[in-house]
Length: 288
Image (tube, rainbow, N blue to C red; front, side):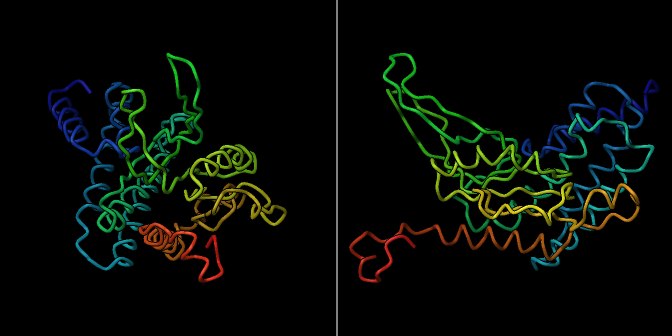
């Protein structure tokens, strides 16, 4: 990218990417790659497509939830297909470039649909949430935290001070780990950490979300785990797509919207502190 016109375009794209929400994982990933200066011709084309994707979603004017999601998913699938084209597949899966797109869509959807009804909560991405904490008698470290990185989270920030030191502390309300292809080893890998999370934050909802399933789901039963739900958004197995890449399903609108509605209902159900034990005794139900 040596001619002045190309350099000017490159600078404009970087300026626009510098202005995006830092919680957008795909956009942040792209900005890092653009700053590296490598494969700049291809990156410039991808940057244009990404900025059109983001502007397209931000410019949806409908107030109807289903229609907003329908239009967003259409824009998402168009950009997804662009990235999957052979001439644009320049990054290994280790770079997390394509895999950062679905978490961004989830973040954008939560921000649009959920945030307005729950302004006291924060929606974030790529966050280390606390899954366990220990109190110790040492003078230099009286409390230690065990974190877990999640792709998307809805948290409630708290002002916590211990030993005169203010802590960056948030209660995780909803946490998501997002995959492109979900296999049984990935599920096993998060089971234990989710169990620890639920011991510390019993009301936190944990979702494992993937585009495709990469395991024999008919032989598995994950109902007994601490994971609240495993969602396969394309309702398809990876093996099917491997045989016929062009036959990949779109993200299912009904499934995507039902997930949004589930979170809405869950957040609404946890607004009011449960009644005390005496009041619960009048109903005969002491927990739920």
